[in-house]
Length: 543
Image (cartoon, rainbow, N blue to C red; front, side, top):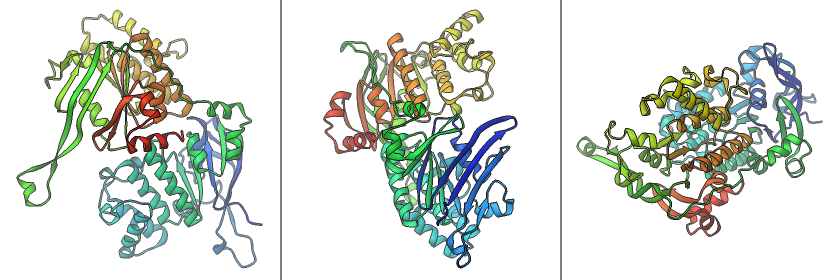
């Protein structure tokens, strides 16, 4: 009888006196694709990282039995198993990164910025497999080619920051292949990617899994990804394994209320009616944003090249309206947002409430209050050294210095209450720090900070892509409520078609800096004219 590759039995994980994973049991068979699903805080990532004891300060009880390959077994004997909870550190080190490899959510933090990607793939080959340096370079180039990276020999000499998000994720996968891993643990590998790249990475993992016969343990909160990829699904809630089984069966007929709630957590379209003659808050005609580039050769000493990140974009955003800007990574969405915020020089017409950016900080101060921004990752956009009161009130000192301390406090409490944060629910709210809140609560703080100066336009730069499905739904409902109450206009930058479907009145489709299609959401979603729009919509429909 063939043993499972991994057998987890009554595994509990605790930090001090706090137990975060409670006696979970599951198997991963050889060559199987298993998804571990749950919201933030469910314990799924802690479980995956603890398999090879990568979580500092975690105390583990129970067993994690790892089965050796058949090549390592003696004739006519069952393969040896190791208990990863109790195995010695030296033996565990041999398994880490070799038999069990990891692909993390954000490869930019997992890759060393000081070394080329070629050096980092070669390092795995040399340390884990003992491949000589010269041979390792050729082998690493072949592995990059296997992952679908274009011009692999050239990319070998690139540093992580010189690659796109999808390319960096492919490098991480190449490093796992370099070790000839038998189990690949992919921890949210597609969350930060746009819909088409997400599909490409899933297709890549699927083809490589079949080609190399490795098992995959996929950690995710995205049920669309699970439906597309996994053979079997395990559902975790607050450290408990609440449901497991065949993917199609669990997702079509969930038994546990938590699984049912996850499946029903879809963004719901709820947009207010907007008068065609409503005031114009934001307008662009022939908007162009360019960057200077270095030309190759001697000519580069004297002349600079030019890269057009946004090419002649036209749009109008009215009071109470949402304009969704969609496109893949590198399409120019974020550059467009920075120009709207007055943070990048541009050509063409761009007005905020009828006024253009002057480039002078003092003259533009009144425009800064009218246009505020909410970023993708609130944990990195909120200062860890400042309290809630300091973070959210910071803009008032600049934009409304006439307010006294009582007036600032009153505005602060009203604004926090409007985003669902109150002292009754969060004692000592004003003196807390960002790390004391969940991801969704931090995003509410970021929204409150933007609202403090009573803006007319909010630039929402991927406001929900870092959140799990139920938290995403909560944040979108909050944004919809605020738009109705305050008449806010939203410039929504996203790669998530489901978010655009829920929020947008008008849509701008960007590809390589060009607007390939624009118009009302109903028209574009039902009768797209451009092939690229059809591609984005079809990739997004799997959500």
